[in-house]
Length: 352
Image 1: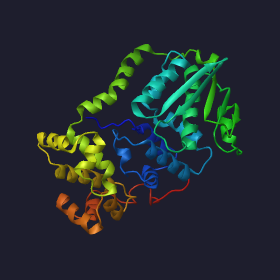
Image 2: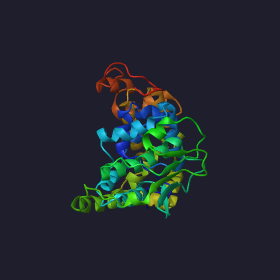
Image 3: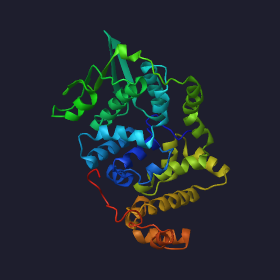
Image 4: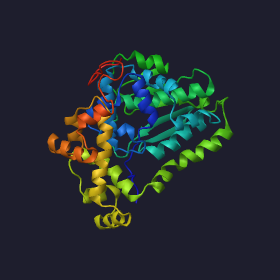
């Protein structure tokens, strides 16, 4: 049994750090996207393509900045790049780096990179097998920007693509021309970045085979290791954490999500000395504490996100868990909207 389905995407921790660095807190983004408010706290969390697209749409709305992709890509220089990008930057050359990015993307996303090489050009485009709508513009911009950034970081040269094609309406987007430094085509049949084939063979002076020998196997094995170590109970709780807000998930729903039968799942839970009801309570306790630790989330919202029909039911349950009310728990744990640099906005609609 596995916690991963074919349509499974992960948002790396580095993305959350960079997002906060440019002024977007995770809670408002996740709320607008309709995603679990604690998604950013679970490094093993996986979401569907549709949920990932909803996340990027929320980022677009809250950022409200055509140049956001540029600021976001640069933020990683301060907050730290994700391991896959770091490994790619120590590759032998630009082509090797792109291949490594593609390889590790397959471990963490249903997104696929396709490429064609012809007449001195290297065409790269993206494919989302499970998508039912176009990929959000910010997601496309960031992917292409990271391709270019990898080439520039790795070679130490200000490389520019031959051209970039966007399946977006033609508008005055100076930010695209400024960052990519090449011809930009809009209303194209598909989103496409065209690199110069000669650039792909440019060596990366920082190539470090010893470092790659250490890092690459660890990255490649990371997902399998997570799956192998996760007990059935842990996997059940991961699913419950994702689905609490939709109401009270039952055993059949979880079994379907994990790709097994209800009877088999029940037997394996029992073998671990657990019950489904107890796991549901544990999941609610864990998520409840995490949500209450975020001062921007109201108690009424916590109750809703945990699947309770009304706030009073949540209060009764929480008192059974902790012996105090949610508000008292926040007081005892010194959690307040005013505990960091003054009052915090509930919902930011611009970059600070």
